[in-house]
Image 1 (spheres, helix red, strand yellow):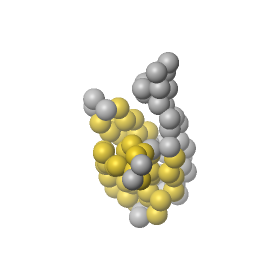
Image 2 (cartoon, one colour; image 1 turned 180 degrees about the horizontal axis):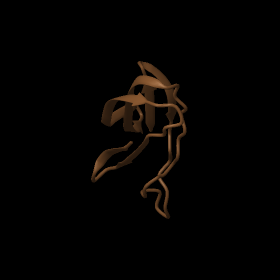
Image 3 (cartoon, one colour; image 1 turned 180 degrees about the vertical axis):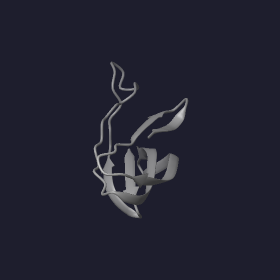
Image 4 (cartoon, one colour; image 1 turned 90 degrees about the vertical axis):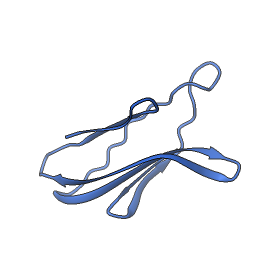
Length: 86
């Protein structure tokens, strides 16, 4: 499960099922969330869905200054965590 909030408002929340022959492999996805130019606080959480809801295991937050036409890429993997590319 991944959740992305910008300036305190949740803009994206989606569950990605495990891949692979035994359904234990990594999932991958590409999420495009356009932002207006200016300063934005971006919070991203990654977790597992359980019988009791979602257990959020990893999170990161950055305050970004977005210029017109600029893109920011966020990559996550369990070994290295979150990596932001400006």
